[in-house]
Length: 277
Image 1 (cartoon, rainbow, N blue to C red):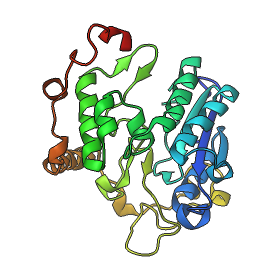
Image 2: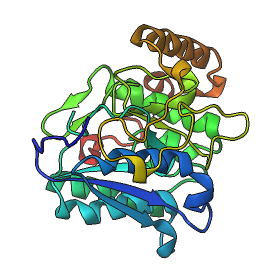
Image 3: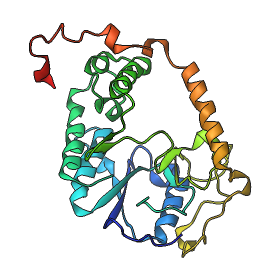
Image 4: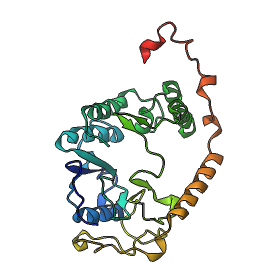
């Protein structure tokens, strides 16, 4: 806990908000309060950008454009949605590389806004490569067929040196809070999905009160956890297993596809199929 040694140079934490649609003060008080408390005792650079100041492009693609624009000013960047907050400050961000490839990748992703199908889940769909499923997607279920196609195409591989690494679920810096009902273990760092200003109502956050940056002067000062939300790593593993089983059982039928059996491989591109790679 405290300042993290700059092993890899400067780190910029970038939070992107949409003030007109969802004002920060009334929607993300818990998440942003915890983040500000964490950053108060670190040496990271912090920027919060209002996406509503630029209405030229769509919200989700704007995120990638802005991230690409700020990358040259730092060595590393952590981009967060406004509903992502810190549950356990005993971690450093140094525990995703800034290169020309990364900047071009983000810009190319952002530019795919202009070729979206009727339903694409915005940037989540545009990243993937099974184009026909993406172009035919009309709702969430049909978009999931696209996702399954991509996962099948990628197979078990997760590392493409020196360009890209795909982390396994729950193995990154942030995971969805609802999987463990805000219970957190020692290896947790951030939670995603905290869309609340305060701790009133039915939602029980990990905190007895919202972290206040003015109290966060070092160590665990300013952090007021509910003692019953601290759980073990084994408990998190068990909850993840339950989530995987229930998600598989509820997976939409129209998304249960095998692209290698249902889509032509060469019939629509012969003899120039390799030119499209």
